[in-house]
Length: 278
Length: 293
Image 1: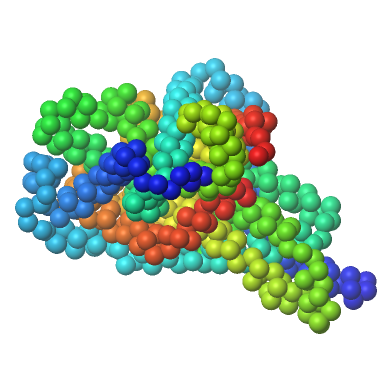
Image 2 (image 1 turned 90 degrees about the vertical axis):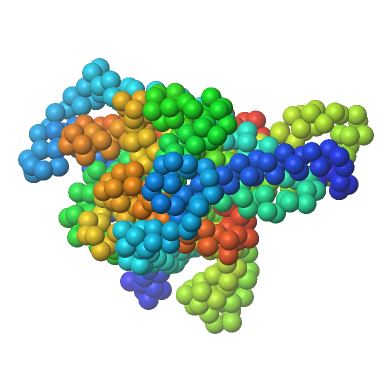
């Protein structure tokens, strides 16, 4: 849509305007970072000013208050393994549905599509009953398997949409060369689908990493807390103790911001691709 | 059974089995159980359930001001938030298509907020509204910043709207940028030759051509705002005086604060029905307005 590539006065005005909006978007990060290194008194007296001295001790306290290493480890375990199971099994299911158009598979696909509409709150209360009977309660594995079940519909749907476009001839050629179904899937289909895998991993990562409600219902032990749960618990205990809470919040958002800055290209194109397909 | 049959069955089992088992266990069974529990007096503790028919539903529709308030709050919030996020997202995208020098940095900045989850954002903004705005108000004297932010109904409402727009506009921007990139130069040039003004080109040509993206973005924004929970919980916790309690939060409170899980599941079933109807209507309405270039 880039009409004219000349840089004119009008373009400059647009540029300045957008930079101002951009600065406005960054203001919250300024407040967060600047106040995270102030003394409690200084935060209360003037939250807008730059810190007069830097209190690194705040970070030590925040680090310990949310037990950051443990929360980070739990969040990583849950996000990584949920993602692995989700993309592996969802892509296999989508492949089978595309290549074997049976009544069962068609009904199942219809159920997946319909289930994407279900809000989590609509199933969470009976889900707690089911998970406690199935022995999923208070275990990271239980939580990961919940993400597999709850995330499967969208992931299968997205894989299904893009697998339809893989030409059958390539697979047939591989079969002639002696590959079985599993070989075709892992050597032909999987490499061709790689961009879709990236898209789905990114969408699921943003959701699972930041999710609060499901983990809060499944996990009860303190040593299993993920970052959102540990943060919530901190705020329950120390309301308004900002010199402790703000550094904890900075630590909490740091991993995801670093992930974003490192993977920005994939994330942005992944979201655009996921939206067009969805 | 022949060997071929057996290998076909094994393949179906291996490829479709794992997702099906966990989908049934985690989504389908709880969903169906929910319909049953919504007609009982389930309280989460005692194992004996009493079947009460449609009494929970009758209660919600006739004598539950909490649910009615939560519903209207959610509807008002959804309308305002969906319109504002889409307008901002679209115009950021539109202007970022221009040959700006700071284009890439700006895209990053606008997109970044939605990497952070609603819960942490809610806590961060709680600090900004309560402490930060007060400090800016003191320094500048602007009455906007001296309002009792989050302390009364209107400021709590607009507080959530501000954070929501800040969080999601960049996400929609990315989708609009992808779609604007597909609008062909030829169409725009011929419009220019035919003497179309800038605003005519925007509204009569570009907007209809990016209608598929509008469908997706409306769909996403409605779904985020109607189901909002984390941000609501962390920023206002439904307050002051339940004025900003969303339906999702109301279901949560009914179940875990009031321990009326039967009533909570009935609300959850109603919530599902409303979400399903809105989704169907919305997809249908926007699909019919899409045009092809």
